[in-house]
Image (cartoon, rainbow, N blue to C red; front, top):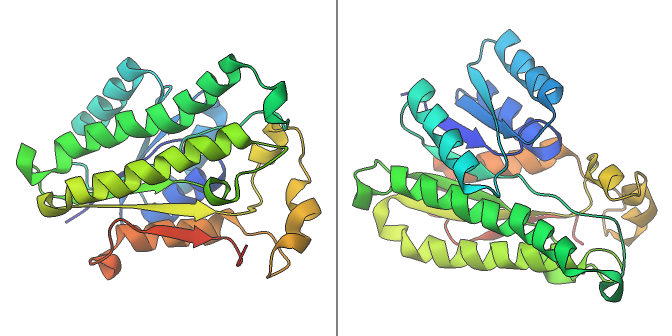
Length: 248
């Protein structure tokens, strides 16, 4: 049976690496993207050139109507959904909490928390045996920031990812008897362009001496953890927060 995975925020970074790796392992892949259609198309081309099947759907995961449309497109083009990777998220410029305004917190929570909730809800409605589904897997992308706190940089992002952790733990228990496993991957310092959007492209190289392994990680290393949690090799794993941090 060919399985289908939806990777939100799949046009760049960890999302793109996960989508490409999933396709290489036999999944039909749907990716969502917020605005960069060219980046999404590049991911599709790489998957298709390798013989895989992939589609891209534009939308903002923090907007309910966009999420409903996203899942409808997957239903229509690929049929039953077997895995969701809640990867879409964002952070803003580095600053202290006492410099932040409420609008920033609302943007960060909307993208990272509300978006993950909306997508998880739609996945459960499709996968859960309670709703006539055949089971499935949800992997949420959290962050080591959830336990480190990201002082002087991203306390809002850290708090949002803490909420993702809590949702992961609660939802995993809620649907454990309904054929769905729910876990989270918490990356540490990873070489992706999210640091550029936060105002410091070289952040990983600046901070890597604080990592026990003395290096940053790659998007592919995080994707390997996501794919393991999606696979039958992790069939007895649910409610787990898996750190991919080089020991940090």
